[in-house]
Length: 443
Image (cartoon, rainbow, N blue to C red; front, side):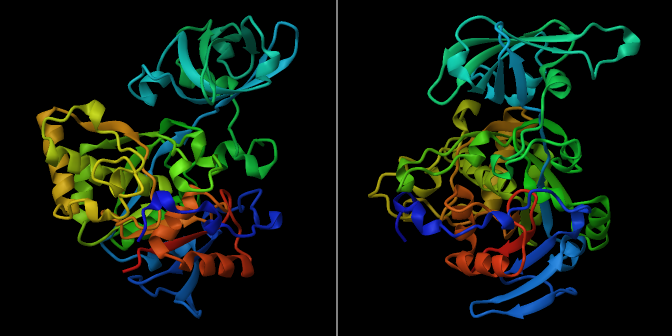
């Protein structure tokens, strides 16, 4: 198979009518439809439909426990969507929208940046940047504060520090200095719905565009596969002995970044912060044999990144934390440069099992007295990728010509086209608030 950098994005296109995009979630999270594809599932009470390429079964998320093997491990991304949109006023009275993407590079991770008090530097998209010449922008919020404490209105100021290639570096400051930046966003900001929903945020989105297990502030988009899970679903998973593990990948705006390059070698994958505990890696090792199932593409990318981080610690036990980041083409080449002559994964040594890589990572953490792995991953998963950790993926239906569709194709091969054709023909709802699927990695 040719190197994934040589793939043409036009080969991963399909027609998605606007009416197939779910603009709103269903009233009940776990009533969304669930398509099951691939080997290794249990039959449950789902309806099996014989297609011309493989059996497809249909169910709903309320019954997902019936479709998963007992003893397998479900891995969830517990990131929390922050109110990343801020509407500021210019001294002349006009409005400028700032979309907070990620903290400035000198912060070690998103959590520490979110906890900054009084001021912080953040990379932002600026709506109306040309109209913002000089001077600080001001945002005054009088609601959402504890009025019983007689607190004054929250005043937030924004100053442009630097124009970056795709955004601006902004200095935020606020007068209620005891508030963290996370608290400022909760009070003053707005949930950033995906642009393809093409509507304003509504009150209900504040709850429904979060998973019920969201914990760590930092994402500008929800890990949408998890939106379907409820406490009742979790109870049924427990009854079937399907435990849960939690990892964190803070989803960046790059998840919506269209692939504009004709060939993938000219597309730069966005880097995102991941945060995984020692205990979570122990859970992964304990369940490798019975099967690990990623809930969402962000969970999958984190899990597969852990394998390559583990390989780094095998090759260089003295490696520093700053060198743990997984680069875009690293899994496909021996040196990670993605050159065209590196046309397959045969350049990567195959002697390391998932258990060996993860155990080496635990040993490295013990040696470095690290309770968590916090780094960035830029990994792109595309056809030709050899999955190391996961057995299956729970996911929604994704946009045409997106890196997420490349990931789906890496799991199911060219069958993605027929799976998506089936979903379109059978009234499945697409994208963030839509229906979902369980896709097993093909043998």
